[in-house]
Image (cartoon, rainbow, N blue to C red):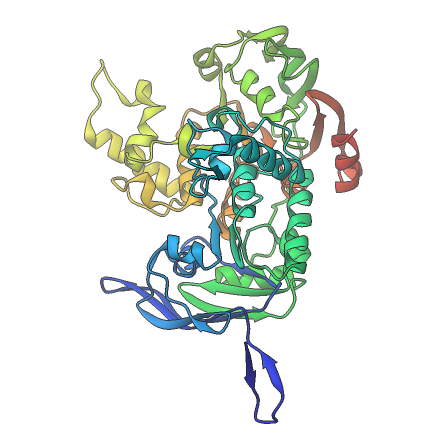
Length: 503
């Protein structure tokens, strides 16, 4: 559809237009006068801290919420879907950061859920499996279409979500942190698919906290803060420092604090470690007091499995883990915790916190031995402990607030806080900032460096190259369950890491 300018020239209408969109819940305004155009085959990056209004606006576009005011148009026609189903029928689909798959169904069944191919009155499973396999191959996911989703890791589940969206006849795709669980190789394949869809005229709203991705994939950038659209940029290559300051409303001089000089004392030594499941082989490294040791590699390289074994979560076939002179028994989480080795898991919502419980209760669960006396734990003592943790880590919430009401960054601070309270000697963080906004990421990085400054040994597993490079004194790169080398100093750069990761 076209509009006519005063000069008489025809101008193509954008695929999507939002005009003065507002949203209130009771008397609380969460969006105010959001106006946005998205052209055909265009990627518009939507940036902002958690709570800025990105999810609310995206939910309105995807039909999950109705705006309190304002109008929307799709391909020049009024667009006011009554729900996400109607929006999907009109070609607007959203891939959420949180996994929305049915764990007991197969990959293929999840991919085609809601539009199962049929032959007569029966489901055409051969066609469904064949098409799913093609999609998975395009995304670099080498799994069988009949694999139950519950057997997949987070990264693979995210790719299945993306594969499902690709089966729909989408005109506008909203991608909310689509690469949060992906490594560089998987991200490259996803971006290849985005470019292909752009050539077909498909448009995107792309939400991400990874600045390098924004510069690479976005045609335009809009920044939200406190429910308002505060900045527009006509290129994805906008200055990162400017974008961050616009998002958080204040300058962040340095995203990665300067790490301290590690001490000479070796705290953790891993020697020739292999697990019984065959997921990693002959891993050896050491970590000094006050050192941040990074572990990099593409998804499936065995990074998480190694740190889980160090934390006592799996059985070993050979090798040993030494904390000082003390050998830690394999497959014994309590022994590792008692010795001073703790793990912040990758999937904080299912493994790190209890979302239906309060901040105070979550903080207490890992510290019952220190908070109780003769088997009795008082409410006042738990409350005081929670208030200390909240103040120490700058958690935005009160002790009796439920975890599911907190942002991802504050949930992560709760996970870190409950383990810091045990004064660990080694703290392991697996994907510490997955799905966390830029302001919260900076706060997490300050926590990590602050721990190192006190002499704690820190291990960081991350798919974000900028993160692992910016934080680490040394980086071990893994591929196919093996260590490909340990980089240090000027050797730590993206090219060297990816060369080893794909060796």
